[in-house]
Image (cartoon, rainbow, N blue to C red; front, side, top):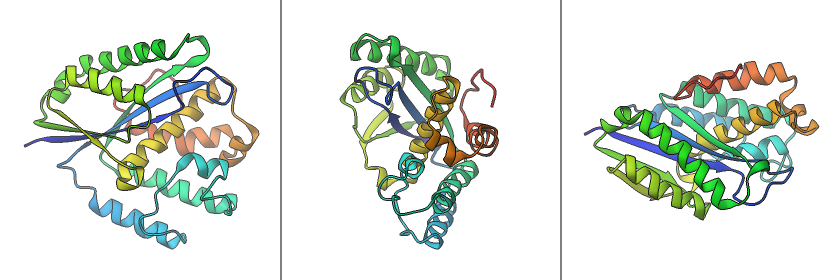
Length: 232
């Protein structure tokens, strides 16, 4: 039996546009269950212990960059080490991902956001239907953070993936859910770089823009399911 796991996370919300929330991003991480990642997870857990964190510490990527709880007492060197370990962990996994996003500046309301995102997701699964049809079971993992997204997933994925099962999870339950969070964070930074909206504190964490693109963005986006038309 071929089984696929899909971990879904988001960045932003369905509210009105604001400078601090210009985008709504959805990330789906795809993992075929026959590809064992147990050793990679065990190694990553051990590396977190060596950095002074609990073995099963749930990594929150945005707060690492912004120096928010539970990382508010760590200096930039410590936070970068954790983030770098997360990127290295993601790079060695046999997974792929796809991001969908909406810029909210020209959107009227949450209904339009739902419509546009539904169309993006529908188009993706329609164009790649044969890749997903081969699976006997597909498990969709989501924390039900946004009611609107829960509705989109229920309607759109059930249309194209009749073998899908939905599971509510907590971010601390699965490392791959934390990988989805990492990719949401990276996609948000990519979009903010394109629109020249990166804050000084965010860029301070990365160093130079060229360093971010080479050391982080390029490494993570090698896992992208469908290549996007932009330069790293």
